[in-house]
Image (cartoon, rainbow, N blue to C red; front, side, top):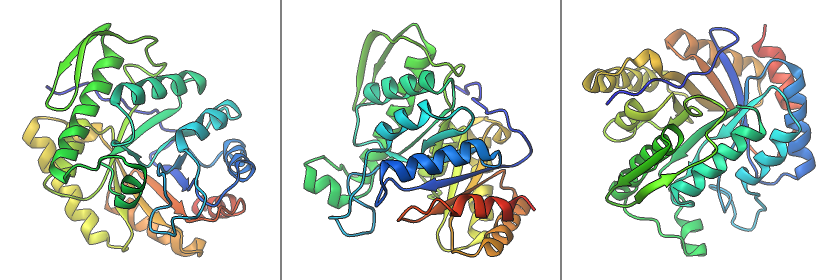
Length: 290
């Protein structure tokens, strides 16, 4: 069944966002970055990652919980949208995730976007005793999570009998501010599993480019078109975003953003690696807005 799209009203043809990591940063630093972005006017969104250990970094480095940070950050901002890029599906039962998401949607007056992935960091799962099933099973679980999130947020009473999760005649209130629900975000490049899942569920597909490979983006965007056609979904209902890490050169970032826009990107997401630097988002905003 093809569902109605959950689209975000855009101020222009392009959206621009950035990601800061909840790693090696204090609450005050993250707060100041968000408040500046909120009042600055250029950025449409700010993202946080969702990990228990710093990804691809020493385990002892400090990292805070993204979803808890959202509660404080949503309460002190008015305009900026926000979301996880992306939350690990293995960390939370989908009903708990749904309740967190709807609560934040209300706290922010409808500014949340929900990014969820399979989970991948073996170290954090092993150290904290969280099961990390085989990849095939994780994709099954992720599909069920999106099914449950969508069902709870749309229906007055909802039941689901899946391979991994069961919901029985469940009331779920309140419903989200955004109707019928906040947008779903799926990131990844896998042509056999991730992109078909994005075709099925995503309101935004994010292409994570950590190798600066526009040709791969074009290839995977074509695959998304094919996957949408296979299930009868209009690919225009999916926002196409590209994420790349900031090299420190604003001109280079602007040129890369231009390249991806010409290839079909509708949303540019720049990831600032830790430690957090409050001066970077306004500096890059000035370059991208030229």
